[in-house]
Image (cartoon, rainbow, N blue to C red; front, side, top):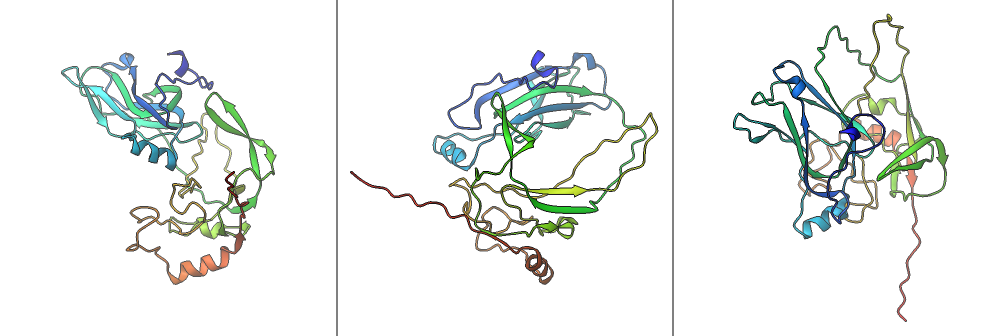
Length: 299
């Protein structure tokens, strides 16, 4: 398939879009890995693409018409030649292009090396590769940022490639193109303390903010070695869709053990004296976004 051979923003999109954002008719993408037939070692599927996902109002409209999304599942052929699901969810690449790594090692149920991805998400694949390389002499180095600064920046210029919207970081727009949540946000400046652990203590950033991280320089490697960098980030984003939970304000804050958001009356944010002290110190930037009133007149 030419469209999934190169990373060129020519996307495989052989599915029928429905009239609800993020929804497509159920479809599948079949890959023939026959050149790996007889090989039972480490096999990774590398899927690079992006997903045009639904917002709260889209999901509400879908539910009212009896529709629902199901995450991409991976199937292989069993000894009867029938497709059988072996991975219930391979995940989705939200928004901008991302690479999903799917471990196929030990998942094949027969000599067939055909695999099939089945979903009704609108996922656009750009490049798909297979890796059978063995991990040898891999050293993992975990680094904490030496400096983490929260800044007001503005908005990167939007660029469009077909259905995909991406951004040009080098061009900043300072117009007020997005609404703000009303509430109190993290003050600008150093925020290292808020990023040290997964502990329900958040940097609360508003639309147009950026978080700038600095790390210590790593030593130069021999010519036969190279670094691969992975950024680990854990947090939440909140949308202002009218059918989302509390879409007009920052609070309530999410937390790891919540059953849903907004959480019910029998759940509470796990506030402690130490967390309260930190939030009182850092959460001091009030934002009030006053929207113009809409006057409706009948003639």
